[in-house]
Image (tube, rainbow, N blue to C red):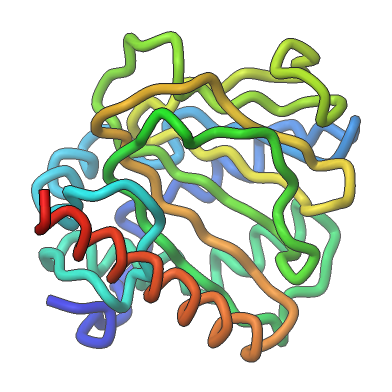
Length: 219
């Protein structure tokens, strides 16, 4: 099943909006929050089963992937008016006319995680982790005070199943993680400035994905 085939979910099976509403919003050095258990435990098995099979590193536009019905309903919930309203209220930002962009990762490579801020055309970044357990020291996203070192840590978030990490994109929203290689499942949801940004980013991610798959087949 592809993203285009997803139908709106009846209710919110996968997202705990009450937990999001209860979560404290930190203000420094940029607005951010963490919600463990944002995806309730009973829903995680279905999502793990229907998660896209991604063998290559990198971010893939959800519309370019194949996945099962539970994951399709999950994507529909991410694009729902209820989640949009919850994020608008929590971050005190008008998202009413802002498009969404969703990308999915399945694998990490050693070069991932370098310190960066997201592009200014993104308004909010929400990362939802899908790894049933996480023992590695690397791959734990760190929110940072500066771009100079991974040790200037505000918070460190293990990519454990069902955890939401979200932040307002600002020139100071530095983040990164120590290197790790292997399976690392994460869904990234962004509200962005315009539909033009969605088209541009899908083209960029789609081209990158095709190149990675071509090189993977040649190995």
